[in-house]
Image (cartoon, rainbow, N blue to C red; front, side, top):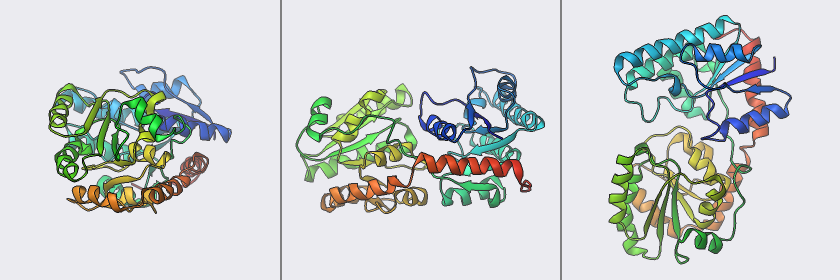
Length: 358
């Protein structure tokens, strides 16, 4: 058993799948991705295109849940379950990596939860990135915890450019040389709590006028971008770059920054946090179990519910260089060689062992 089909293909937006596929390829496995999108049974047809396939590794089900109305969304939800059932009828094992319990921007959470429970039952094994999420997924999807494996998300050290001197990066980005730079980087979406950060920044900045807040990333939509711009205008020393950041420029932002600020409202796994860890950038974020486990031992600036402002202030009294070193140590555990080996172990178990009853 060595032929894997990964779906959907999100490699253009996130290097995660390519890094995992590269790790599996180094172990002699064959990893395929779908070509284009078919409206009718897209997963089944992709598996036939690349036949024979041993394992379907499903990642984000969202692209298969389309529609502008409730009725159309229901049709697509049922179609996805039928599609996966047909895949199983071919003798293909299904492994699903659950990146979030429901999509962050879903407008039909009840329907999406229903279809995700169906997918969880059809899947032979599930993968999550931490133990806290494993417990939540087992409870939410109503499946045995024994069916779920914990494999961490890998780092991005080998994807983007190497760090450059801080002064050079700040000059390239036209960011002030004096003071600390607090960075918020990644897709700009409401669940990431950026509005909360902009609410407290003017209060923090009164005591630290030399510091800069740099927010960079592509907004979810034009309306959200305009809302953020309105807030930023009222914030001293706050910069908003509301655009897609090219891969070749990513290293400049983390080279320029002293601290990454991620005031999430809800999250399971954060690619932005893993990117910051890849550059050894200390992180301010809520003390959520999933984030805390990944970041150990560099958890000095994790905070409880309403303490973002006090944590920004407290960061002034933390040894940032020492915390950056601890962040690098936390990132050392997230090698893709290890992660791809663990993933292959899940594939093998799905193929060889008696299925856990759902």
